[in-house]
Length: 205
Ligand SMILES: [Zn+2]
Image (cartoon, rainbow, N blue to C red):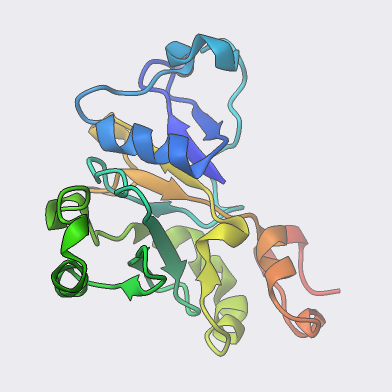
C-alpha cells in the first residue's frame, strides 16, 4: 500500500500504484501533492482520511526526490526480517540485482547501450526510515520474524509521502510504509499461533 499526505488538509491518501507513487515521490518537494491534483481520481480534501497514522501499522518514512526508476528497471525495497531497516535494490534489464552504484556501473560497462537511458544518476539507494515506535510494541513478533526471510515490498507494505517537514513523524523522513497488524500476522507461517502482537487485539488466542 502506498500512501501520500495531502499538503493542504494533511490527510493520508492511498495511492493505487507503485508507478504513481514513485512519480509523486520524485516531485514532492518542488510540487507538493494534494487531494485534488488528479481530477479523475475523485479525491477531495473534504473526504475522511484513507488510513490513520497510528501504531496499528508499521511505518517507514521514505525520502523525497528519488528519481523514478529508469525504463526496464524496477526499484525494490525489502524490509529486513527483524524490521530494523530496509534495503534497496534495482532489478536490471538482464534480470540481475543492482545493490549499489558500483553494481550499476558494472552493468553499464557490460551493456553500454543502456548508458543513454539509465545514467547512474538516475539510481538512488536511499532507504526509508522505520518508525521505531510503530514496531516496538511487537517485540515478540519481531523476535520470531528475525528468524525468517525478509518481507517483500510487494506483500503488504504501504508508503506515504508528505511535503510539510514540520509534521513529519521523524526528522528527515519523507515517505511512509505502513502495514497492519493483521497483514503482518498473515505473513508469518502456519505456526503463527505461537506468538502475536499484544497491541493488536489484547493478546494471544
Ligand atoms: Zn487534501
